[in-house]
Amino acid sequence: MAKKAFKDTKVGKWLSKKAPGIVNAVGDVFPPAKLLSQLVKNEPEISPEDKLEFEKLLADTYADELAYHQQNTASARGMYPHSKEMTDWLAKRIMNWNLPMLALLIGANIACVYYFDSVALALISNVIGQVMQMLINERTTVANFFLGSSKGSKEKTRELLSKNESTNQ
Image (cartoon, rainbow, N blue to C red; front, side):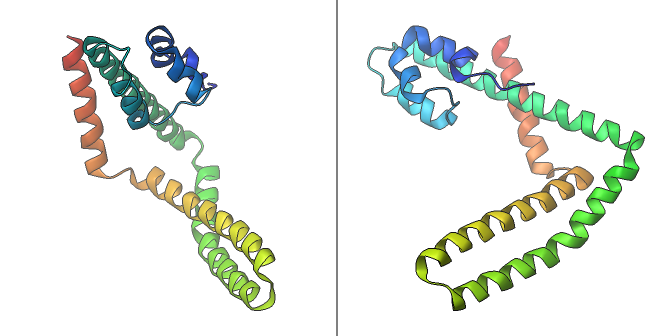
């Protein structure tokens, strides 16, 4: 499912009516909720009632995204029993090869510090750092898939969803 442009979301449509200047400022990207809250809070043209309505709308949008993420994760885990050979092979390769690759990249970065000038060194180190971050993210994703997310995270999500349901009633 393709991501909607910010102006096409519920929050974006609401802001288009109440504070079009904010929508024009943020463009097509959905900005962080805290940034939007600050912008709306400091907007003099929006009434206090509208500001409360906006906060509720923002909370609803966040809860919808959490529910979508949980549903997406559940369907991925639900598919696992039917296609576990490929998933196991991929997970095994990631867990077995990522650490040696990280060690190799660290060694390459150290060698680059010794042999290259500052501009080339900065560029090479940046690329190596990005690749290392991707490798670490792969390991984290595999671990989260097989071991699940932290209990605290699940409880926080459940609490947010229950708060959202109680405000809708």
